[in-house]
Length: 478
Image (cartoon, rainbow, N blue to C red; front, side, top):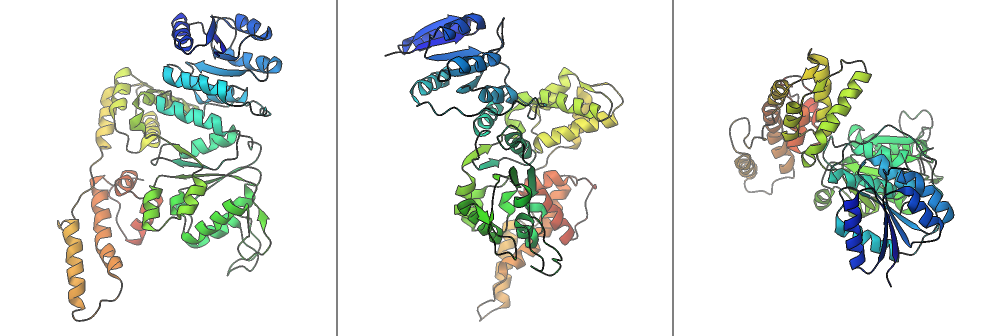
């Protein structure tokens, strides 16, 4: 038998579309353009499911949800809104909505949500966390960002381990913080550690702490990040750079829920929610044997992929205005970009993603005297930042493939008649690595962010190699 579905939306066209689609499925659809009528129907015990808009003439649909839940706690509510922000999705979830759909919505998706709402058994009601009014932590209303908002809204009330993937500069830590700030561990600490920024020999001590005398220089007991994050969230950034020994210990924490400090013997209970992030392809690292497959599956319980900025160009104007407002609040001159300038920014590829856009807007605010930034300024800035493809030749002009073959031939020739000793990989790498990095930095005019992107390296890893190989920086850019 069909269900009775109550639809409240002040847009007549949307009501008509929903009525036709749901009636074809055999449901009885009752429609209204205001919240008061919807409330009267619910209070009278009518309806098996509610679909409501947020902005209506007499009341905000989100404000109506708690009242509905008090009188009809089992009645499921689907929220639709053109206010497609993270906070809208979060508020809908916090107040007890079954699902949130941004407008314009996909009709097939809405029908699937309706069928799921009518068929999935009712779970025990969760205690809604105290509502928090925060500045908007993530910007964008593109379909790609809507999926991120919905994922955050679904995961915020859980302790599931989350794996965030995405290119450098896409905002992985912002998503991790949003999961914490809107989650049930919000009252606890948010502790972040970047695996690429910690020397390999110190990572275990940084994560798990150490006891006095555990190693040379350990003059006192030190608390690790797991202990610092007790009751809150531990964000493991650039998890792909974690060394093998630390991977083994982290896997034990995820399996057993406890750990021991370096030099310690007493197990410590791990009371943290773990969120990991990486810009690297972990499946490739698994094939190479540098990342544990079993650890990947333990971390990848709830995956979130952040889209690069080039996949959501319509979000660029809103992001640019947001960063301009932030710069003004920090004391830089107030700037506004004209429509032609914003249109040009939308067409740019943004190899440095959101972070590159933020740096550009700050630079515009600091260096240009005019209040309104035109397209000529943007053209000049983007021309200076143009990305050049990574070269495929060594500094001597020899192709990389030919250079590798030459080194192999020379290596075996040097050991003619005997089995060469191990070390070919390190020899070839030493010969190729420095000219490759030098040529890439030259192609990017010394821009280390872009060079790291082209090479597929973490920025901190590239900086370390520049120091180790004594490579001069072309323009002194960061």
